[in-house]
Amino acid sequence: MQEPHPVGWSFLHFLEEMTMTLIEQPSVTVMQIEASTVRYLNQYRCPYCQNEWEDVWDCGCNDRCPDCNKEIEPYDSALIEGESAETELPVEEPASANVTAAGVNRLFIVSYEIDYVHRVSVGVTADSLEAAQQLAEQAFNDGTIWDDTAAMPLFSDEYHEVEGESLAWECVAVAQLPEPDHSVRQLKKEQATMQVCRGLVEAYKQGEANGGIIDWEDLDQLIPLALQALGKPVLDIQS
Image 1 (cartoon, helix red, strand yellow):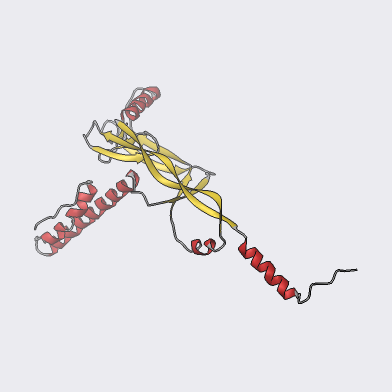
Image 2 (tube, rainbow, N blue to C red):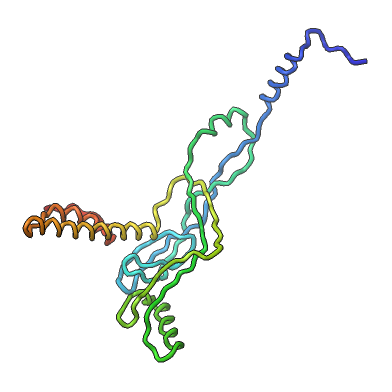
């Protein structure tokens, strides 16, 4: 025989009690804690053009000179605290805390890696295959294989994706976005160089159309771009 329900009991009342019990239970959410990654501030000095610069890497690695593109070893490498990554650990919090955290935007660094082959071709004059390769290897070790000289002209410097390459994505939460590294700065220099070249050609065309008179304003606006291409600070140019 089934035991009778208490007086005043109803199924709706039962659901209400169960709901309140679940709300009062603590829930497990995610707390982000910062874990520092190892980073190094590397100092470089180019023996070829005497250029000096610094860059942040995850090791004391070589870097290419921003001016002459030679591969240079760091003369000093100091351990610093790098960007902050975030590690997820479970922690008990009230259920209401989940509501406010859901809509908060955070900063992320999203990267991808892909396999590629770097192919460089130069011209060499030698009396044998072995001698030609030896000359090219020596130029590579000396960092002069990219100089594009009459004795060793540069024919190609290309990056090709490997057939069947693996594409790997990585996403890391950070407290703040880092400064662009050398590769981005070099890309911006090259873009500024092309803008200066186009501007000079256009100014020359305008000068021809004006009877050989070039407007200085057409040239003045190219000076900041030229300084950016050279990696120099932009100065106020007085016309």
